[in-house]
Image (cartoon, rainbow, N blue to C red; front, side):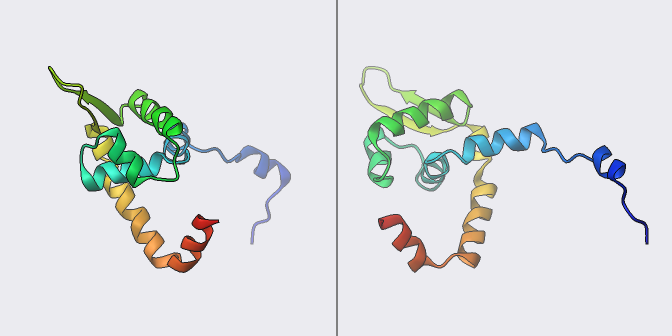
Length: 123
């Protein structure tokens, strides 16, 4: 059995991939994952519909998050000619998160107890 020396450990410094870090910075930010999930499940949404589906997120924060996701090319803001209608939808990059979100749902279904989650979210 080989023993590790201090110099072995120093030479093998652990580092995360910058792309992986960036992904978690985007999706791990409060409300971003839920926004993406709603748009994946229900398609393009007006702001008021998004706000209704994510009621604990204030309008101010929802606006900020939508702008951030738009800057990351995950969400697109769609305007319509001769109308004040604005809808938010996912870009192809955002739609490609479908498998990720499906995996997160699967993990949550397997490992989290819904009664504990509801209790934590209502306090």
